[in-house]
Length: 97
Image (cartoon, rainbow, N blue to C red; front, side, top):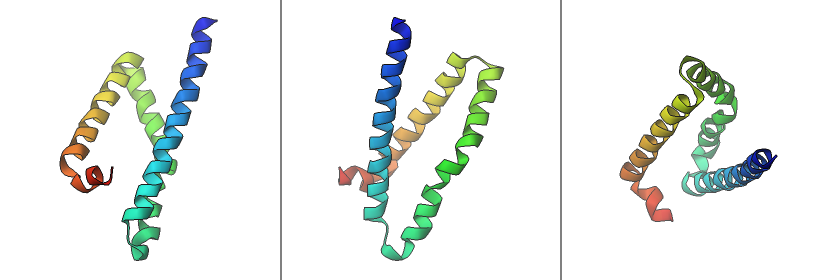
């Protein structure tokens, strides 16, 4: 029972911080992008909602081929690489903080 409670608390925390992340990104895009291009940029930004099923299918395939731990290790590593690349190459984003 303790494990289920911890999982539920973790999910609530994950949902809360995902909400903060999405609001921050949306605000950042609305602030940086010029008015003339905002609709186009927001349409590309909103593709993440449509591409979620494809990403879920790819993650499920990785879990099937390897194991959950292996698949999530690969996904975490790829995410870390992208975060470091963003930190290194997108100076303007760092200056906004």
